[in-house]
Amino acid sequence: MEIYQPAEDSYLLSELLKKEIPILLEENPNLLFLEIGSGSGIHLETAYNSGIKKENIYSCDINKDAVMHCNSLGFNCVHSDLFEAFGGRLIVKGNLVPLRFDIIIFNPPYLPEDNYDKEKDTSGGKNGDETTLKFLQQAKSYLNSNGKIFLLLSSRTPMNNLEEELKNYKVKLLGNEHLFYEELFVYELML
Image (cartoon, rainbow, N blue to C red):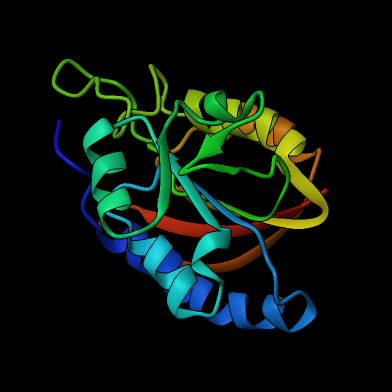
């Protein structure tokens, strides 16, 4: 399995994180950051370069190659399907991982499964929304009370079920980008 490489979606999310993280660090210099689906590590690097302490940056990926790659960059990354590894006490490199975070980011796989692509790091399930829906249902348990989720969605993602789950959050559109085949949206979610 190849590591998911940055594309327009990753770059949009990264640019918005560069703007948002410094503001959040002014309020809390010890932000705890978690990326679900770390891929190439672009957002881990963005978090670190934006001022979050490396020891406060955590991540996971379902792709073991991505986990090894992010660990080789010096980040705390574990193999996990969404929050699966965070269900109990998790120890990474001898340190107990906090189970609630100030920032959780996710650039989910959002394309519907087809005959050619059934990989969990690119296909969001049969309809394309299943992975994101599962994330939204689980994320509430891992977010600090004043924490924020940064979530990327696409106009190609079916929204019927997601809109119902998003009612559990305060939702704010941070940015979007129109491509010739889809529109990308980055949302800030709070409890």
